Image (tube, rainbow, N blue to C red):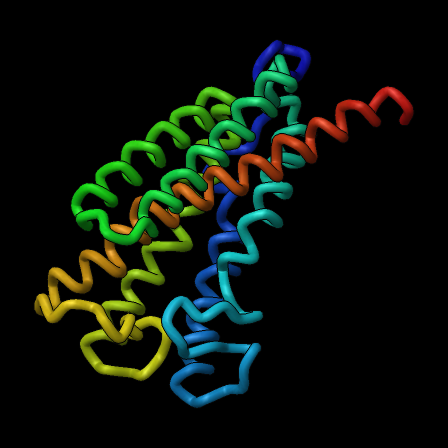
Length: 218
């Protein structure tokens, strides 16, 4: 807090601007690399291919970055232990949703509905744990994932042969728009968004918890 008692916390848009630009640049670079057959593991054209060039690795880094920026602006949870417990519970719920989604022999609609409910609850816990960090990660998540959804749309339309348009061998023939909605739009707008908030929040909260314990020694 400043002398007038008002928060010095940076605006969310200013906080996420550079991280969002970095994420978009990596997405564009990876798409270019996959189209031009750059080597693995720099890029990876397989379904859900993990590679060095990927925004998923940025999530813990920017979770820490946002947490430290807010910490230095005196915008942080009052009860850090409670925030830590909520962050862990949020992660367990997110993992639980993933396990449910991968259960064989269960109807897709049932699996996705249960996954959605568990993931939504995980997001709610993160919002309670540290509202300012939650808002920053939510905004960054959309700023980084919406461009990926756009790239995937273009890749699927153009048959680029990249991981952006790759499908599992057994994926049903259901037409372009249902396929795009199922494999790109919903995951990017909700499930990967939740991954950004949950994982980024966990790293941010525990980094700041450590900083708070070290602060008196400075």
